[in-house]
Image 1: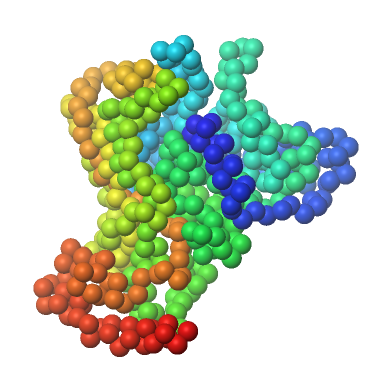
Image 2 (image 1 turned 90 degrees about the horizontal axis):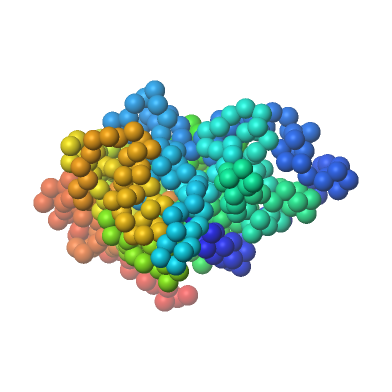
Length: 456
């Protein structure tokens, strides 16, 4: 995450997204008198919380993963160590550090773990009393957090440190995390503003935001373990999951026909008809920016500007060097049809074993030399024999946000001959496709809706 992207997100969310204003919190007088001293101040009322937080995905950036092919069940996976072509790196090879100087003589501190809620001296997966003291509680819990104070710098020992806002003002504004607290990191994931997920959580783009809901209203958290969905691309989790039925039930509609679809059609299929963000990158060719630095050549679109593809998904994941995506089929009763953003990227593979190679971004960011980045990452990971060759990887991203009610897909959107669902590709026979795309399925209902609009 770049500082430019971070500041853009802060500005965007502060202007447009729902926020939760912190009410007076117990201990206010103590903080006003003694100031804020980090987690030890919080633990006067919440003992043991910092230690427990060290066991969460937000701190470890990894977990054991049980629903993805070709992983070691004894190991943990996540941003800490995964190699895939959205980032083409991870916390290990792209640890926060200074880039080489570019042609303008400039260098900058950058790395994947700039979003880690520590101070970098106590980094991803660290533990012990020093790590507990390094936790940045306020970045998630303060509505007055000054994000301009959270930036990397080099201390007198030459160590890279991530500073924090531990001001009394920020500490006196603590409460439930707001949209701003979450989005500051999550909407600049992957190297830029609205690039990875491509959704803007605001009233214009999401029905939940329009109802003044915040992220943790759905991602209901206990002991800092945050529920997540089953995105084929998002592996690490805290062992707790969420889905639409948790709030809306198994029969969310007044219309019985719609409710019958719920058994095999995911809610997202009808209620998230668009997506956005990056849909392709080339890590073998970086683009030079006006400041003299480089970034991966990227194709992306704004929220609601990309159409998803649809596939059966049973919440298990096919994981191969050139493909990461949903497993499932029509015959599998645990599968439902889901919408996905298809992302494709070019990177370097090891010709000797067919595996994707990681890339240290510091060298190409300064010079555009992508193979220097591969060499640096290989050295860090202890890979001595490799032969880099370009190749493409396809990844399916789940569509989980940009939820709409008024623009949701209706019968004719799917069942017309030119509808959004490719029934043949989804496993239906020619006769079944002919039946499924007949006006007899949707005509009467569409006429009734048309009359209702005319009367309105």
